[in-house]
Image (cartoon, rainbow, N blue to C red):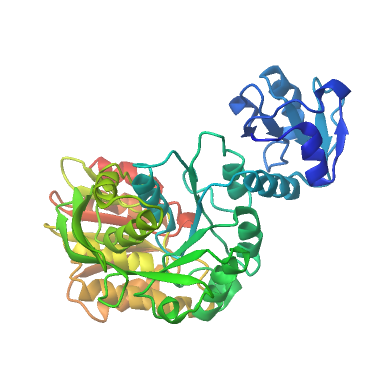
Length: 453
């Protein structure tokens, strides 16, 4: 880590250094929160978890080569130096913010109700053709994941791409205060976390808190197909992306190459070029336009953008496609909200064979939940989905919405055990099967049964 020592950690956090004086100014490189992941020179953070207390593993971390620990309780018989703070969670944010301030490299921040992890991967793939890129690993986009990402910055990195996820007001301010993005992408304003944010205007207000933490030269890259974002004034340069002709960067002539890839043209005022994204789902096309816009802002040539997309790979649990030999299985069970479910159903509708959607509850939608679940059922019917299998309390309304507008088949199961028992009889050879629900529904438990068809 650049310019990070136990003494600086103590100063940044307001903590107390405990240890040999000779170790105060030792260099600290990298961070770990699991003693099994410690590398020589790391800062080991003693978090208290539901199952284990990191303080109990401090000496194991020192044995593995940790340079320093961050603790919120004294460490008796510690084998190395540590910084004692009131809260390791609060302190890791302060250290992450300090560490980010040590780097004068472009930082791309991004958020959105749908598509932020996919966009992060697309942006990183494009920028990787010109720069050495640090990107958020997986979906570590919260108030712990973001500082851990920032603490991974090293002298080798030339640009950072940081995913930022929130669920309440003030959350984006806390993240942006650490990240201080130069470019900030918002993929969508959708029906997510409505219990905390109220309505779409609340979602917009929460996500756009980031702009208060950007400099005058900052650039907002916003989804111009989203009505709220199209009309929003971020108080800085604004570039829009999407499918509509009014956008600065547009994905046009979008078409699928089976389940293997999405093809489209990226058009802007500077011309157009064709790209291939090796992933399933037409929803990748407008997100590719956002990645292309970001690449152009940072000087990536069109040919390098095109090549970057070819290296893209979706993160697990997000529209990954498997040919089991009997069915085409679309595993999109990482999470769900109305916008992402509709996008998944639209992509499913373009596949050959009988289209089957296995849908679970979309959680945290607040008082509008029943209406939104019914709308998903109606949308599935209009999309030509021949068979719908719904599971969960709220998904009863998806089932009812589907039956109100379709002659297809729909069944509702109260729990996964009933659905699992029925799968062998309900899924046929040659089917295209989508599995999607909110993370809390744990629909990944259905996948082994489907792969065994």
